[in-house]
Image (cartoon, rainbow, N blue to C red; front, side, top):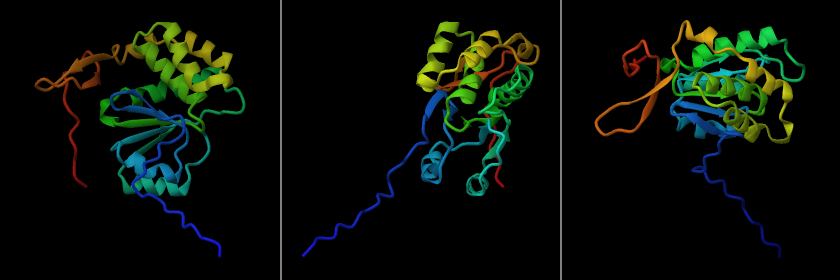
Length: 200
């Protein structure tokens, strides 16, 4: 007589999206979240998602965002065809303005695989943070792997952060709280204020 083994699903297992990683305190990156990742994403207490693909967001994902009061910011950057430098620059610039605003944190950045478009946005953020270019490239290549694109690296290298600094000064870290080492991204012209949560 054969033995039937019943597969048990552990509801406590949290599955992150592909290519998931923390960029900074309150900023995360990944590939496209699947329904199996929703419980993991709930643990991040996200306020916002920056979506870098032109395709419409799936209905199931939209329902998850609505149920968890997560705001979606979409910047449609083509993935299969090379976007023009000007359109890519404009999209990255707009996405950066959302990304460095602490009122939108915690925030998740994602495209399809979490490699090229996400890598370009994070790379430009690193330039805004005054990272050396070799470290910016190393981080990009760590996520892109063998699919690293020379055009992406060239875009990051030539991206001009001064065009952002007329609105937002370079990002600084400030430690807050009594003995706390948790850090926040701030603008130099602002005093630190923790974003206020409002009940709906």
